[in-house]
Length: 485
Image (cartoon, rainbow, N blue to C red):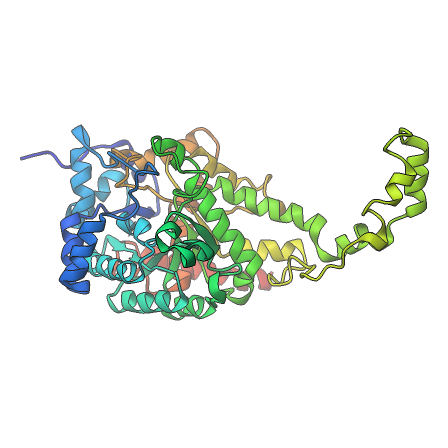
């Protein structure tokens, strides 16, 4: 009988010292290709199956080096089997020091960007049916995330509602659409396939689509959207030979674009109850964006630019005096300056919006804090020490802690041994990069709050149900206690 458990693992030892459960916000399933194909045939028919088999697995091209040899092997073969077999997966969570796991797609990350509308939708539905069937017997320990393509709001809502009907509770989305440049595709569709246009689903989406009904439906159904798409296969990550070059920073770039789009487009203002996860990119980019938003607002809010940069307020006499005193008599002269476009009367009339923050509804730095901090959650892997910046209240404006969430990434190449992930995360405490209280937020509270605030029944019937109930009751009582004081 083969050994399948890692007895007395370092992660299990960390778990023993905690008085709260550990929730994994982002583990992964490794889908068997044959199982995916079974459902593709069921959903799309024999013709679609044949088309899919001819075209091959999405995301793999000669011009871009994608993941290869990306699953555990050798002495870690048991971990590969674990991520393919949910019953084994649930049994081995104890080795990893994890009480409950939200399990995300591997296949669907690329499937969400398939340009063929029918194939993309068939793939998403096939995967969702597969996940619902695979994980139905382990719902007390794990739940899978649905795949929801977002090329149009109609498509997104249809798959969201179907996933909900299957009992799936959270969804994987891409915050962007990567289609062909329309002007090229119109002239030559085959040539268009070699081009790429990236558009946000929030900020000025393609074809004028309105995604507000989709965000509202996420709230109605209590299904949290998780951004889980990187920037691979985009212009700066297209090495045909070097996967590591393409992989570095990919998820942080994709997540930053998605989050930035949500802020500036006003999604956060219009849907304050919407919680969003940004997975696999860590929290370093999140701290950068949060603080950058604060700092650019100082100099690019509408009142500041009118006060300090309005061309009509330019002191022409002072400019001429300075050129007289400090010009070089050749080309930096008052006379040459007078003919330049710097003069107030030479300025072009602005016909586009002047207030960059109008759609967002942001009129102060506090508004940035109040839109960003409560509703955004950042998946950070166990060995990512940059997670610590999320908890650095001396660094982050208003002394806030951003909501980083423990995300093991079990199932992918960077986690060959699932028994080590919790201990790797705990090393941040040992190195005094974060406190034990921060670790509690990271490994339990933030993820529990993220899902339970969208869907109070998310953890019903799970191994962590009672702990989450107590946490949410405590959080609900805090505002009342503060008011009483």
